[in-house]
Length: 465
Image (cartoon, rainbow, N blue to C red):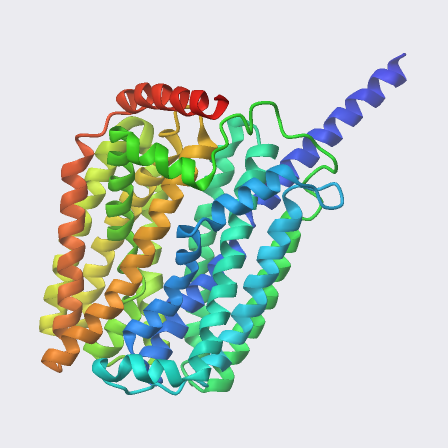
């Protein structure tokens, strides 16, 4: 009898240990995407805009294609498909691996394809006809579209796997750890890449992408393979409130409180992410920094500070509250972007470092507060509302990235001076943070939940007719 009991204890201990190991593995998943996104947003972005002299509108538009696919419903499609079908007895893992492979192989092809683009140096007025004739640009566009498809499919299925596998008591910890590790990996990898590219050549750039792609693939496989149980049923109620993309838009348009929060998320995410694609080109165009210097300066300084204050804000969030933390972060961002404008005029690198630190403080506090608000504003229907907030987020990032490129090209076309282009972008950032700060006082979780209950009942009644 004791042997039997002892055997049961050993079995329970083994299951408990495996669960903890799987939680750690799942937390590692986004590290690979941190490597790839850091390279695309910082290094390759800067090389294409300055070394290759490709229009910022084209470069930023290419990079923002990954968000455009989410706007057209790829997130909803991937989530619904992984809910309804199994491949080899698995619901989520096949889609995660499909997305991961698409990302890795397109990522590895991107640097070489960038050197095939022929529209370098064209003026803003000549851009459209030049783009229509450029086969290299078409190839690079397809590569970025494949990367975006893979990113949306993999991350959607990954978060669904978290919801299926991780208990309510651990999902916040795993999501927070995954996000933090992604940011940390982005910072560390860009620092390493910057040192390697101090001696810059196209071959070295391609080597970085190849090595980074294989590392990302290895991390992805290590993180998810074997975690999902075969032929496991989704817990009852998981798909209870699943809506199509058109129904989600109907819910959004007919619900004032939902529309208000979606608008707030749009403006806040626009403010948080519009800057991430311009910092390395800013260092090149305004301060004349080489590739290795910008790669080692901007992401480690501003991103490192952001990471620290993400952790601090996350730890203190229950005390200071989500809305107050977002407001504090917004104020630091407004001050930080104002300091960045001053640094651009005085061309002082040390002052620039101070501005990056202040901005990083604000970005860290505001991002954690807003992500937390998105996770909590679901009225018990996480699939529906996180899908809506995610779509608003992708639209904001797409417009922020593409819009920054258009501003740089337009302002430079009329003024022949890059300084004013970046000043214009930072002023828009300040205005966006100010609007978000005003809107946050009008958001009420209780009012949103009451409205959600009524609107979801209306949709359910309409569907049953």
